[in-house]
Length: 122
Image (cartoon, rainbow, N blue to C red; front, top):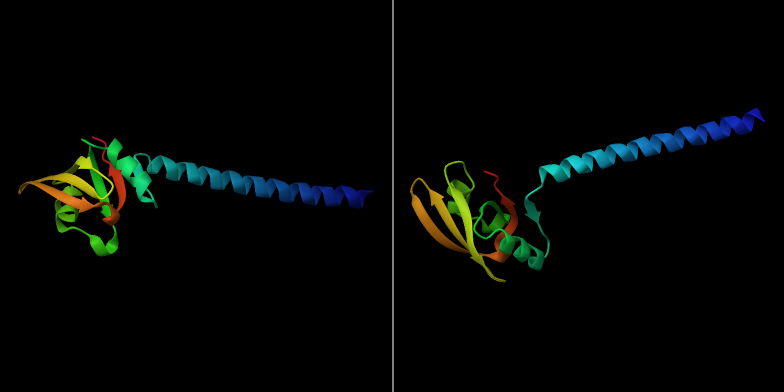
């Protein structure tokens, strides 16, 4: 009889450890989601397009795909010295206004070269 109680005690301890590990994983995911609030990372182009349409007129930070980076966006638009503002977008193109200390530029960027769009909270 004591042996059966001992076995159930071991199983109970194992279940408790698994649940506590799961709670820790959920807490980590919740922290990650709160950090990413206002960020769009999309694998497919339709969801990226929907996010870009919702950010029209807002100041954003763009992460470009590694092989298609733009110097103006990296040096001015995504820094504290300038800003990117989405003016318009469609399935293929994203129209940006890049404001910097050197002036204002308007650029067309291919949607397929954009990896992430993040809203900058002012």
